[in-house]
Length: 213
Image (cartoon, rainbow, N blue to C red; front, side, top):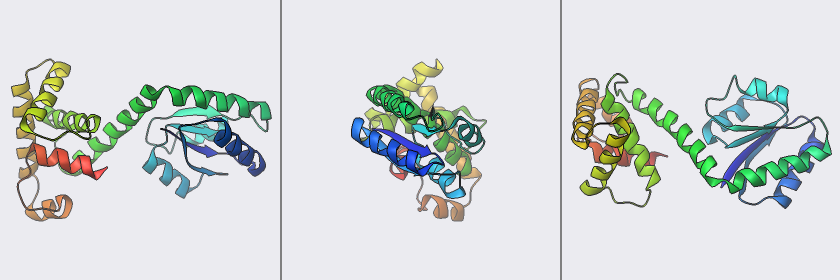
């Protein structure tokens, strides 16, 4: 389902636009709307990462300074009611192209998980950190799969093709990246952030991130 957030200062026009979107489009999830850019609306957008943001062109320019994810922007022409029909048509087209919204979701998820890995003391200079990141994303692509050894080998082989290496090298580098994280964190840190004192291997870490989001 394609998600949207709307910013527009004219409440009457905004209400009309919302009604037409609900009436004429399907597979659209409205995450919120606001008349102005506020701290709360920025926080909501950065947290929920809507696929599409609808606003005036001037508001869109301001938003780009505050939003940390990729999205599609649709512009509202000031109080032009014909523009509502155009926006509804654009939403229909974009919501039918599920691959595009999925690609946007994966791009934004990748940025979010990368930041969390760095916050959890994974070294950005080690290739194993990026291999682990890709493994986590593979698990999102297959949310109902069991993380068996054979399933993770499939992930490794897929990543090996991407980086033009072999899956044993992927495995080795991920292990080294995890070992490096352990060297750079204390038991207290791991207990606070990972909620466990037990050793976290690759499958535990993948599950940790899979259920975190």
